[in-house]
Image (tube, rainbow, N blue to C red; front, side, top):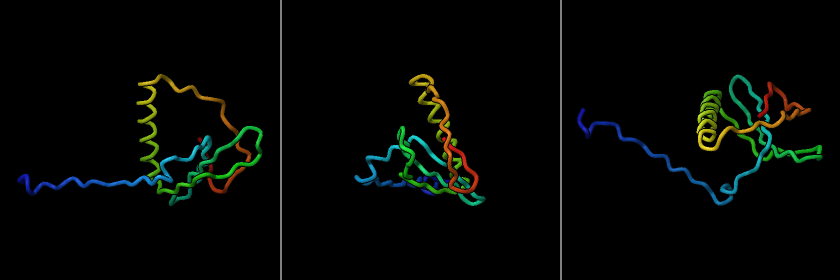
Length: 105
């Protein structure tokens, strides 16, 4: 195979709008799943406030959820290598279920 015949690497241009660039703060994620998809509901829970709204919802295939998990593990390892161990806080117990199998992070 000559240099001209080698497959060219494709680039993906990702646009970050000004509106999205600020991001959304979340200190709780409710994870539900079915056989076909994972649903991540990102929530900002405030102390002494019994109600919280979902700030963002992300839906993905199980394959993409697994890729996300691997990317998070790798990035946490890099962060801790540079900054030291992340201290874990006590677990937050969420007294509600949005339906389906639920986990939290």
